[in-house]
View 1: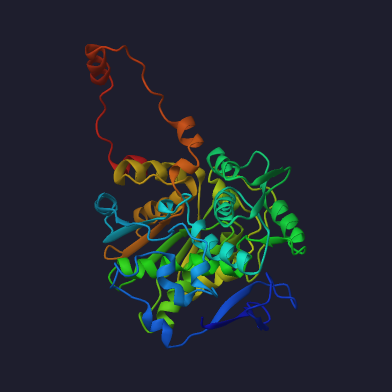
View 2 (view 1 turned 180 degrees about the vertical axis):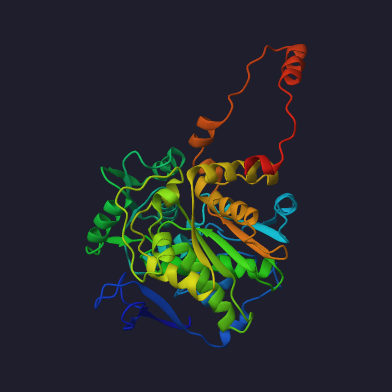
Amino acid sequence: MRGYRFRCIGCGREYPGSSRLYTCPSCGDLLDVVYELGDEVSEIPWLKDYDLRPLGVWRYRELLPVEDYGEIVSMDEGGTRLLRCRNLERELEVGEIYVKCEGDNPTGSFKDRGMTVGVTKAVEVGAKTTVCASTGNTSSSLAAYSARAGLECVVLVPAGKIALGKLSQAMAHGARVLAVRGGFDDCLRIVKALSRDERFYLLNSINPFRLEGQKTAAYEIYEQLSGAIPDRLIIPVGNAGNIVAYWKGFRDLRNLGLIDDLPRFVGVQAEGAAPIYKAFIEGADEFEPIRDVETAATAIRIGNPVNWKRALRAVRETGGLMAAVSDEEILRAQRILASREGIFTEPAGAAPIAFLIKAAEEGLIARDERVVCVATGHGLKDPDIIIKTSEKPVEVGADLNQVLRSLSSRRKPFKALGAYL
């Protein structure tokens, strides 16, 4: 395997890649994985040889920090669909709109990309128990991959603030789930303290190996667009690890000479949990955490995101921006995407569509742009909100005429997208 080391994103100090570190021992900031790439990178079958090495996280193993490829913990994650949305293109008058469907991953969210690498590293260092704080998707993913690796798993979730679909996954996979009377940030504070004990291996996005797996989605988009990149990448932001991972992935492509420029990054937060957006619009280099966060998009209900610093760098360095959308806009976009394009995503995954609709209406998206929106998780992760806000099924007798009468009486004109705006 090619060599790698850790580099602090704050003070710049470097540490051996073999060190069991989550943050910089000197200043406490986050760590980045830096590679010493050699000729082996040329072995990656960019845009070819899919039969030899199919699209997925481990297609790019030369760009991942794993010692023994034969010992990876995997469930064939990655290789998710990039669907072109021609109905939305026509309605919004935007050149090309694509959705990266990360709900295709084994446990239904993008978290699996990071967990295949993170849990593999946990096994590599001899850990026995994995631990994380979660608003949902992280817990279900870590529980599944830990089960596959034969490791115990402990997850801390904010009591009453996690979608039941996600909680049920973590429980089904055998994790010990503790519901903390507090928010996500309280959970993260506790698991960070737990991880000082080497019996516990921390796998929140503070762990630098998590983002290494997640960056492979950027490589896939490049390949799925036949060697092109989007003009604009729109992505939900909670703890902000995923936007940083995509930023790193596209920078890798540029450093390898495969592309000349980067997409403009748009990070989208929910208005009830938008500390990075606030720092962005104020032009600040610091941000103020939000203690009391509330949004229907539970996956991004985070008031003190650990990756805020790099998220701001990603949008600023690419000429992008941070945005905020309301819960009403998110839930409306979720329905539009499902009813117009057949893509059912969790509320957080609909945040990019909510921004896109609003931006297109306001003329902020050029008509010739190629836009990729990241749908982070499947809609079945969080079905409660849809059930609560949808029209209830009409009960009829087991009779053809009753069915026909009901259909005739309830016939409605086709609703154009403009009615949602």
